[in-house]
Length: 390
Image (cartoon, rainbow, N blue to C red; front, side, top):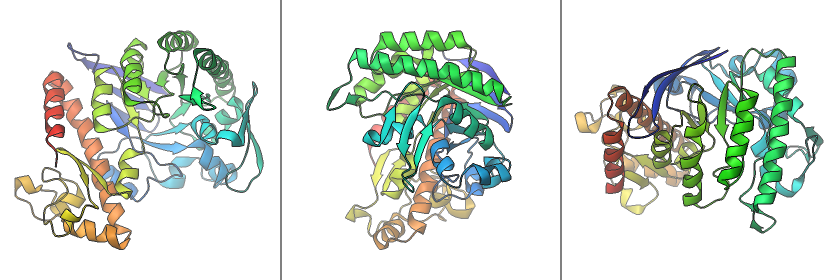
């Protein structure tokens, strides 16, 4: 089941505000979706995710197929009960993970042969098998199995001919996914994925063919795969707003806070990225006034929180009152710097809570600006604040 309601649009951009109704709940869009590769968002309790406003999270088809396996998933009735998350879940198809295996995999018309990175077993992943795995996972949004077109191929920039071959294979796989999804009588929603590399004409062809197949929603894939930022922004500016206005649009694997706001301006409804969680574990903190490098020695005795305007548990503690509003319950930069230096697990747990809260709160502010008809002003203010620096 999927129902998308468009509530508001911005007259000065392609930005839009909506609600996405799925089998496990309603999602307010635009939305950022935390990534939970192995059935968990690293370092964060499910209750904390709910407290910070997470409405939908991701699971990884490839890795959950490897471990714990489909027998275990089947015994729990899917991923929701297994990881105790009763809100919507989106699962990727496994295509990106197969792409990342590089020389360890062999792609054919039928599917992809590869050795398991877990135990070396020889495995074969096809569009049909991807649909079967995701049906067992019972994810609210299922992604088609596609080939993620690389930016570089065998040491050279991917040519238009190579990108076309990849894109056309993904289209044939999309139809096979749709056929298998229907055969399985999966009650959830299947999204098609627009490919075509860095070539606008191929993106247009892929988009048109997928729209003809009439998927409930569409994603833009094949970005953030090693291309320069300006190339990614060019494709992001070209593609999303050309997708059907009455269906949800998802930009896969993107990105920085700036990417999210610009993506919204180009008509994107849904985002995911490992950046807030991965960067948190590496000491890079996202704040309203730019990025903070927690490992810098200048934070050794700094009593300030990560972000004086933030109400997350790391910055505002139990009270939830930010320093800017007079609260003093949060953890200091000095303490978090100390935890990082000592390798204490509480450190990345708290910084992950902060980074995810920042991303989710950013999307909440975007939605509020769209509701109020003030997205353009919000976008300008956001750029100015982030450029100030910490």
